[in-house]
Amino acid sequence: MVLLSSAGGRLANGTFSRWLGYGLAELGAGVLPFAELVGPRSTTIAKAAVERGQTGPRGIDMDFVRQDGSIASGRVWIGGRAGADCIAVVIPRGDAMALPAVAEGQALEPPQRMSGGSDASFFSRSPLAMANVDGAGAVREANGSFARLFAGSDRMRAGTKLEQLVAERDVPAVESLVRETLSGQASGAPVDRLYAANLGPGGAGAAIYVVDTTAQRALEAQFAQSQKMQAIGQLAGGVAHDFNNVLTAILGYCDLLLANHRPSDPSFPDIMQIKQNANRAAGLVRQLLAFSRRQTLRPQVIQLTDVISDLSMLLRRLMGESISLQVEHGRELWPILVDVNQFEQVIVNLAVNARDAMPSGGVVTLRTLNVPAAACAAYGDASNLAPADYVLVEVGDTGTGMPPDILEKIFEPFFSTKDVGKGTGLGLSTVYGIVKQTGGSVLAASELGKGSLFRVFLPRHEGAIEETQARPAEPEAKVPDLTGQASVLLVEDEDAVRAFASRALSARGYRVVAAANGAEALEAMDQPGTSFDVVVSDVVMPEMDGPSLLRELRRRDPKLKIIFISGYAEEAFAKNLPEGERFAFLPKPFSLKQLVAAVKEATRP
Image (cartoon, rainbow, N blue to C red; front, side, top):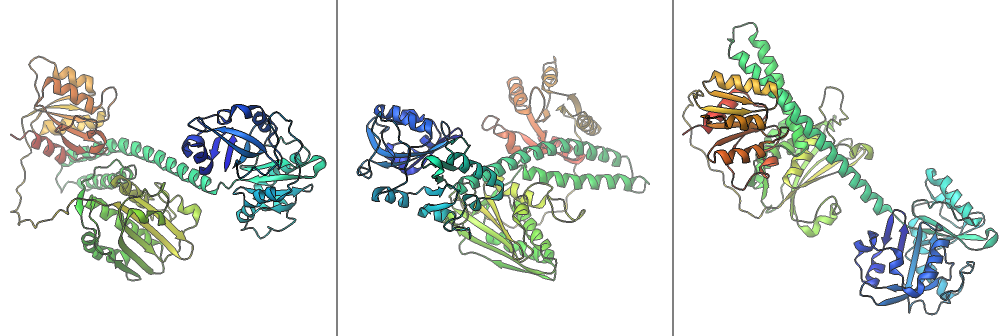
């Protein structure tokens, strides 16, 4: 059993935790000080051992207090940095009864070289990686755990210097640790989880304890990557929201200009060019919102096989003649709940990414299958893929592949390995955002020269599949009448958007009162003899946001109709509204026609 105590916290293994009746997380979190785990009779000797940073190879007998208050005894070996980081190996009483130990209150003896069958058994069978080094720092004895930990090194043999087994960047620190330990100073800081204890005077040797932190480092890296992606997502969402206001104004004023120009006018093509490029920019903003998981989704229950079959013809056209597309459908796929248009965007983006990775041609494989919760561990740990039932979509290619340093960045917005002008760097970030907002996960694997594989895990849906019925042919639509005489309260903090929307509605006959914030809107509502048929309000505003304004408006007029306009998804603020609250939603950027049509629909009798 192992207990690691350091300035950075405490790490106890499961065996030690169960022995004392605690949960692993409870001990590992460092909630209980080490002194509270030690029995009253062992306090003095435990304190002395920790302050010295070592007990010697014979160990000491100590009492520990279980969670229920009972006493558990065991033999303890401590090694590490005097008065600071240390590691304790514990063998319960019964397994250690035959070993001579230091009695309570007896001064700690200088450590001696391991001898005797019991000590040798502990050394060889310990789960902790242990080794003895001589006065020159060369390994002269190591247990099985130490050998397995360094099995990948071709330099692991008798007489190997300890510094030869570590990364080059850690060599000076390891040399210093061993040198200070051999000289009896024992004041050097541990190298990550490598501890040393002096085995005797005169530089006779040192005991080395190593804790494998590979899994811990991997978990820390995953957490750091997750935090980075979350921060980038928040930044992207904020930029997209602000940019949507700018695009709304550009598109709106283009519509106002076009209303006063005929196609034959010389400036008409220029205005159209501005509008077309603004719409292109709006498409990029939608991808940023997809990455930040703030776009509006319209989910429905679908059968994945049908959607991919309908999409396969488009995918084959995208692949070109030099690339073969192979589609392999799984049997009896479970239903999933997704926004069909957004899911198609995911598949298209992954297919295009695979195509671009094979400039000389190759094969793109699109495969689907069910993945039950019990099989999730085969694809990734719980931090990457929570155990649940999923429908898996795999998109693989036989292209150039990616090195690890590129692979870890591929989902970041605007990251691209393509030449300038050949990509926006938003394709895979859009995939990431859509899948995450849907409740799924996306994992990527790649190997240089062999290709890449993207796995999209979509949660299984228990509901029935929605049947799509063929719609009867509709008669040719008439040009809608978007004029009106209703009274509109327009609440928008962005000056350009407020001015455009006010002009657009006024030009169609509506009576418009404009307010720059919620306080001004309430003042307008409270004017004597004033009433409004509909309120058009932004969501994100200073001082009083849209949902807060709605609650105040409902107190004044419970039947007042509301249209929210926002660059964020409807779901982002709807959860802050009372359950059952009815409102219309118009996403930014919107055109003049879309704004007037929304108001016309809201004021329809």
